Image (cartoon, rainbow, N blue to C red; front, top):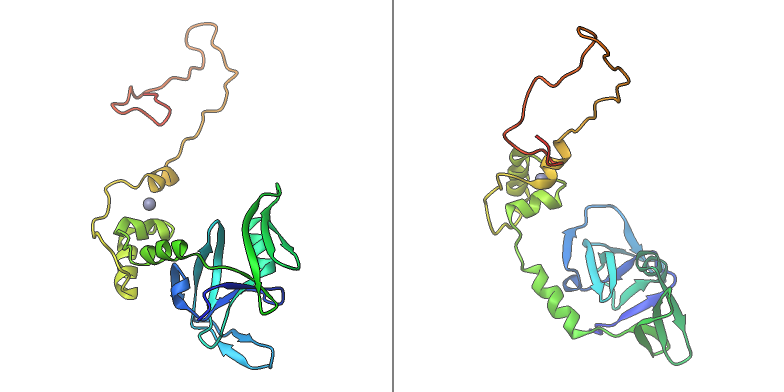
Length: 212
Ligand SMILES: [Zn+2]
């Protein structure tokens, strides 16, 4: 199959028949189908992300019955802040400063971006990297360890290390509070007037700001 990506101004999303184009893929559970030119509806099996360095393709749908990889022009320009130029002999993907990021050609009257093997190797390598328990904790928005372990076993997520760290820095920071005392304009001029003072400390540990 032709591994190139073809530009499609009529497509709302990027679609590919090839699951291996995705670096991260999840089974698609929605009801949407891909409507093609002859009014047939093709099933979507997976959704995930891919890349065409330096371009990101954060949402790509896998539709096995397609014959080409299609790039949604609107999605591509929106996700990557790029400008597309279509010439009679070739096409360019440029950034807003006018620098050409990728150049494509024309095949049978269709503009396409060639597929680089280098990119496919790194994408493929990425699919077999198992993350740690802490990695899933970070990916899933830092859930509690009990919930995380339940999710891992329920969805049979692949993990390389079962150890949960003693300290997760973003979790600690997210739960820590640091409230300021209001600015006081009370000043005592003579003994036994209203007085504010700190009854505890110094702390054995430094605070975030280095205070005790
Ligand atoms: Zn965390």
